[in-house]
Length: 174
Image (cartoon, rainbow, N blue to C red; front, side, top):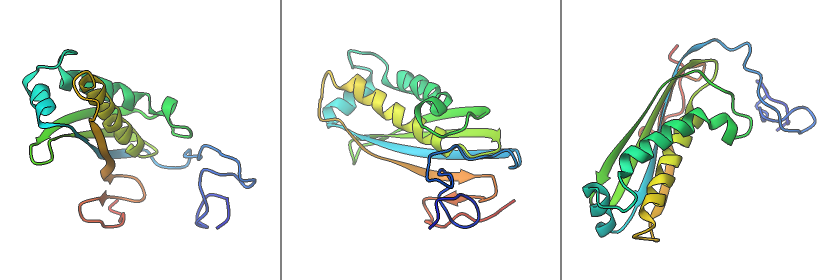
């Protein structure tokens, strides 16, 4: 595989000399793009009860984690090298309780109208929400585990739609 980007199947973030570079998206069309990511934060049943009951010493876990996630999505280009600043239309963050896993499931959704996708913003939002949950729980439990972070869905752009649930490769829908 050659280090050049483009249709030859090379690495798009390396120039012809193998040096890191930001991909040129100037010729790409602006379109609506959406990405959804998920993080799983496992903890003891006792800690989960404190989280859901609002009994942690640091306060409301979900409000704090939501604000942190939204801010993180907006700062992705500052945190992840070679990502582009995007015009974010919206960031939403939801929390579900998985009693069987004794976990909080964080789902972030980022929608942009831009030339490149929002996958990194959604992944960053979910990750920072998970880190915030850990931070707020560590006073009562050090064994909190961020078990996974993954992309669930992306749509828009040339590669179209992809869903983790189906395991299907991206397909053009535009």
